[in-house]
Length: 129
Image (cartoon, rainbow, N blue to C red; front, side, top):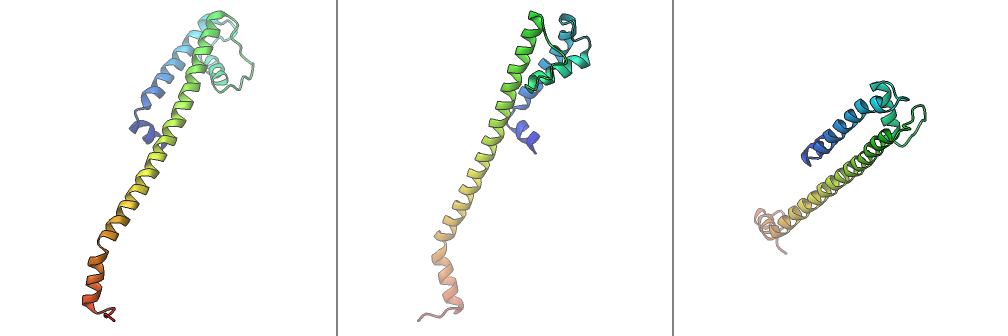
């Protein structure tokens, strides 16, 4: 259901962009950081950096690795904030639409109240006093 909200609001492009940045960063880090030797370890490092957990088993010590880390973490924070805002905004709009529809239905019923009263009188369910 959340993925459908993300697709409807076209935020899936932001998610795909983040995955591309994450994958590219995981490919680049082993080339520039001797302490992060493999793609899998680069993904683990980026996960720890992105989630701000910072386990410390891998550390970017060179300037290129640090720049890549900063880009991925800032992009990750943006993605999380954007997705949260989109989902909350979608549900807020949905609740407003439901409230508006309920109010419209109520007003329509009120507009037809004289007709309903006339039908009730004609059936003699509640005879006139």
